[in-house]
Length: 370
Image (cartoon, rainbow, N blue to C red):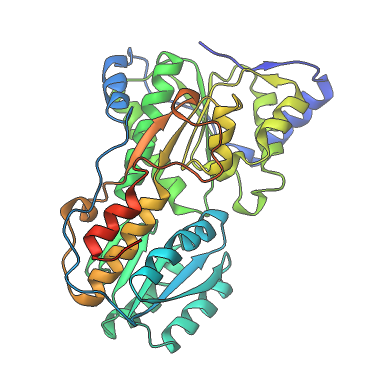
């Protein structure tokens, strides 16, 4: 069992942290069950993701979508910006016009973005991680106009109105693997801190899958859910975590539902005297992968963002051409792996890929030279 060690913390600091917790920084801990956890099942599940999973696309593209206009409704998080960066190259290779439309984080920003998209006479629209309630009426209008929508990270959409709804089944996989890993590391007992962002539906989907998997495993661990508002990413998020861990020094495992949550956390933990924290995060970013390599974090669940984004562009091309998708794409089978420091190179600035030759693979499927 690994516990958080805290040094140099005054009684006043601990008291303040407890007050912050009482004011809503975290929800009441929940017991998942008193029976012995099925560690073997958790280990077997993790073993399936010890190496990169299968490449998702295998059917050649029937025709290039040359000249097609595609809008990308880009949410305001760094990951959404990264997704846009990754989609530009394959879209250009396929001869498509790829317009990034900033959808920000507020309801007004989302409305402005979709008004722009509806006025733009686009052939297809890609939407990433925007609360469905903020754009459901725009989805209705796009559907009525026969404009295919490729969605990722948007749970609860009407499947009849989207050509591809990606990134949702994978959220359940993420949540389940987080639970498997936390169970193995904690031995199925002790205290687990689960960090979520209520404004971002993917983290709540992972929380649901996490809870369900822990229950299925028969874990006896106590789970404490801690909220990190999206507006605090890159600013006070590390302090929220520090305050929580200070208030709960017996935390065995810290589980973060997004890699973006841990930006700036290592230095904040060191400043607070918190060492040897056993942690895992989903959706690892280049920075958080480097943190794993450097020993700041224990493990991460990483998806191949490059392949995922190229798969979305491939799906967009097939939507424009009226071509069906390969079943692994429909089933949302991302290229994923649970990684530790031993699995990563010394330099992770370009992120993680399970298939270094993925651009050539897509080039062969599209009949283009990349």
